[in-house]
Length: 120
Image 1 (cartoon, rainbow, N blue to C red):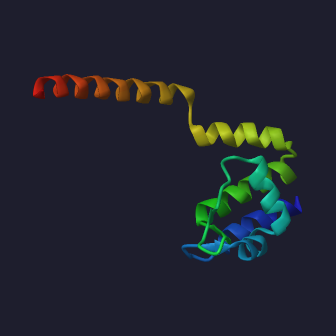
Image 2: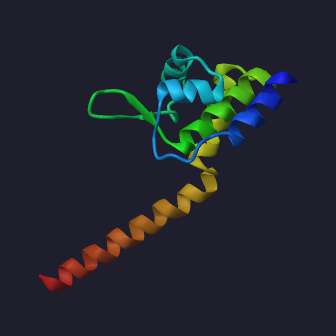
Image 3: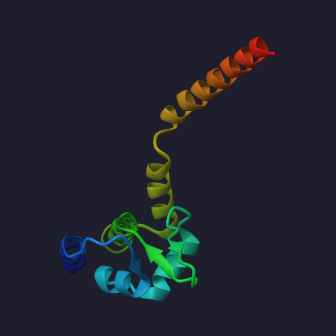
């Protein structure tokens, strides 16, 4: 259970900054930079921005996501596909929540079309 303790410890030690470079993220999370770059290819929800010079810049939310991925892979022993499904579903939210949002948008569009016709 050693990884679990280090995961909790690194979450507490995350300095409060706007951006983190890949080296800092590696040091804070205990995940090598090449693994972080690989995870970006495997997990569509892990997409750090790049600065003007092309360097990856992570935000605190990215670090928390990396810690979650690390925990699922190394402690809970999920596969890459299992983590993708587990966190991909959480990132999108429940399917039931998305349907009303689409319906709301369609009602708004329809109402705007009606208003446009009235104005013409």
